[in-house]
Image 1 (cartoon, rainbow, N blue to C red):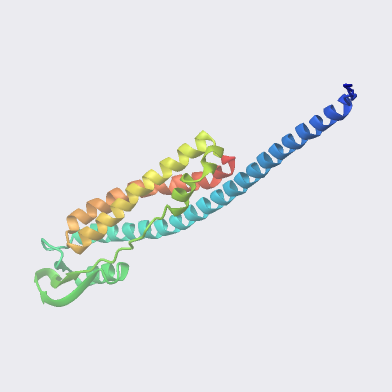
Image 2 (cartoon, one colour):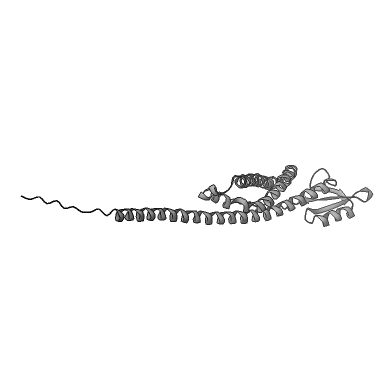
Length: 220
């Protein structure tokens, strides 16, 4: 019986070529996947920044109205305090003085009746009416962003500033809600205290809004 041994020459160039093609193919696939992921993350980040900017601009408009209203209410309280006769339903003043205040703060005090006193003064009975602007400062864009992978793409300074702004915004919202509760309970003394504090932290928040609108482009 014969045994035949067949020798085949191994083509190393072909094998190395195939391995090289396989290596290049795998790396190209990894690179493309990374590039595609980075592109999507960058696009998501741009959308997040756009939405946060829009949210902050809308919140600032709402806050501006609230603070303008609270300033008006506080000024009215301050000027009427000099003529209130112990409470907010009776004032004592001369007609000219009272008319000036009514023109400056229309609707703040409504007259039911009046009684003439000495020295040209009148006792006006009525009621103090206050209309508050109660706004809702949203943080939907911020909360949505914190749930996405793009948070890692924001630099530390930007994240710190945004988190500080939304923390202060929550404090302002609490005071806005407290002012509405005080008005509903007709606790005017408490309302004045709340509005005074609201003006302080609200003014700080306005500055924060202006600052982040300038700096948010540096969040990249």
